[in-house]
Length: 125
Image (cartoon, rainbow, N blue to C red; front, side, top):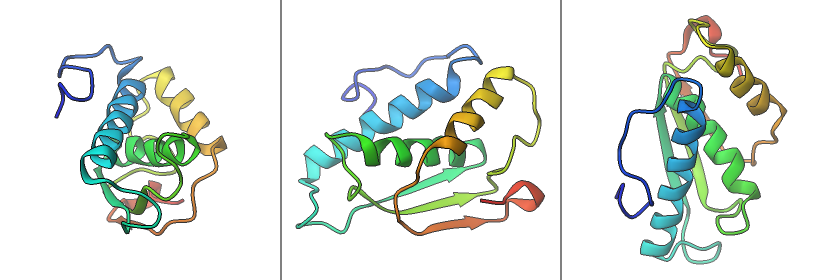
């Protein structure tokens, strides 16, 4: 599916990693929407699952997908995160990570269920 999304798997510099991963998830959502004919009236939506920092990337992708005219707010029906530090990074190592969290906190999430499992102290939404 990576080639269908217009990118090959590659190593990204740390300052761009979360943004590029979010772009990849959005491109993957578009491929799934087209491949399976997902629309508001014929499908219940997709379930997005993210583990650890992948849960943060998934949240960002879901928020951005809801505002994207090609994807729309109906595309995702459920977000599941596992061991995801929603409130702040568990290990704050990169300034770009704080920018990513700041951008995410300012975005409006679509009204979908979010199931968050075992994130510990930092797992507050």
